[in-house]
Length: 75
Image (tube, rainbow, N blue to C red; front, side, top):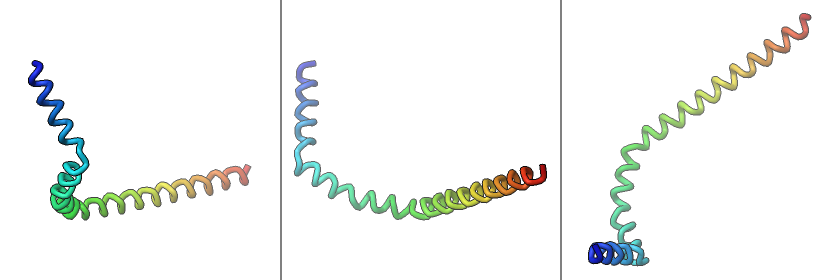
């Protein structure tokens, strides 16, 4: 168990170095760009649905406020 812990500690120590982190980020950048390129249409579609949903809820809220005001004036 002692050697296993030492190996794990050494791996963590190596991974915590700045140059290793920088190289890892540099190596993963093309992969991340590729993934983002593939999911951009879904992100845009999600944003459009959120905005559309907000506008519909806002419209319903305004209609409810108008209806409530109309009921109060008739009484």
